Image 1 (cartoon, rainbow, N blue to C red):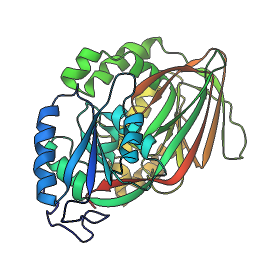
Image 2: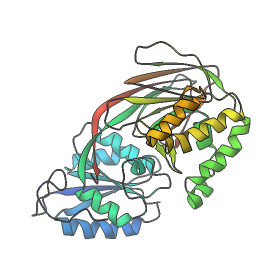
Image 3: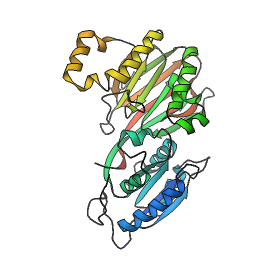
Image 4: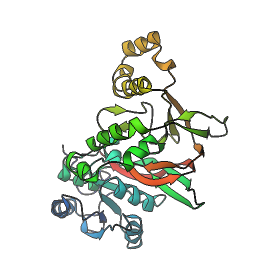
Length: 341
């Protein structure tokens, strides 16, 4: 795939100064495979596109990108490229939120949830680098999570894909890191098979906007900006990254059969049947939409209160410990991202 290589005009969203005035900052995770190839691809692309030599700022275990992004902004970067996995992308996005400076993405991780959802090449590093420099600027929403832990401490996090409380977070917390490096997202399947038999639903109260309080016994509640997961899983078919809304998914199966209905919903009904008029008619006739194992909602804000012990919490596929409550809100159009179209 080619994204063009002309200098100047509007192809790069902000325009490129042929004299080399525009400068990108590369916030990269040096532990990721492909880091050396990344440097070579960036040098080639910045030369072809007329950019000045990029500013390189590596992430650390203690700070996966937020401080580095603010440093890039302080040095006047016209573009900040997040090169790494979902954690790097999330941290760079948090640093760029509301700045008006665009973010490019070069996936170097295993899940790459956000990149997959917006069409960034995840298996072609050179193509992703070109897109990061000269793609089209798209304004997207940011998901903000304010969480409280059992000891009363509070934290706020920005993210781009989804956050969740319950079995999805337990699955992520129990994923084998070595297996994840070898087989990627399939490692989550292994974790799910180990976690699911011992999982128990929890009592929770949640509220969307100023609506009524719901009190289900749930296995998981997810609040999302986007709806696709690897493996042809379409969790939320109607989610849009720029609609100023958050999508809520409540998983509340009563038994193993309920989990099988959920699996059918996200791997067959959502990505296949709902794409055609005949498929939707079939679902109407068979009552597929009336089943209550998976419940959807939508709003600008979501509050979750857990009744009982704290539950595991995850953001964009990374574990974040356990929480007793979480408040979510959307920050509409807070981030600019380079995309293909």
